[in-house]
Image (cartoon, rainbow, N blue to C red; front, side, top):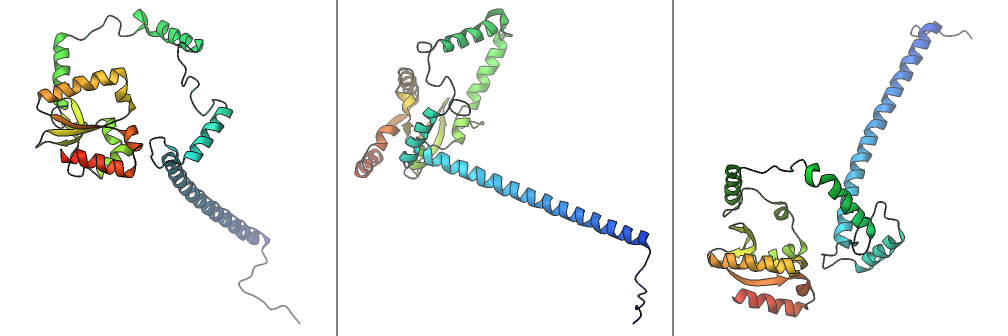
Length: 249
């Protein structure tokens, strides 16, 4: 039986090679395009998951979180003691000049590099006119409501997150003079401060006393200073009683 003639088919070897080459190039380009899009997709999804997991781990292990995972926190501390310092806690964390001579050496190195005439600002000072301009600008920025939100005001601590739900009628982060009040009632000139442990050092106590005296001179009364660490140690019933006593003022 004879071969059937196909008018669309060619016996030209050169043309067949060109067709195969075009098909191969198209297939390669299509494959590269698909792989590239898949790589981008995996990268985006991976970064989102990584960021979300990092945030969850921080919240789970943060020492300021009252609901933190104590077991995992202790396990992390135990492991950190076995790891080397690379990629983890700073080598000088917890060390002082009295306990480690490397701290003294580091301080002396910085002092020799940037003290005296080595300091680029050595012997330079602002003119009295410039000082007055800077002072006037700073006072204006912190008068009533500051025009510039500080880094501190952008962060919400666990203590603030907790008390924001309690003192709902208060003005939060209210500016008076150069100070920022945690919770304020401007019509009554009352305010409440929620303090971390830095407020109970010798320097912190002296600063808060000066701050309280200045605010008192302007007619403001501190209704309560809440020490967050002490408040956390109270039972639920004690916390409710404590809050009721403050609100009664």
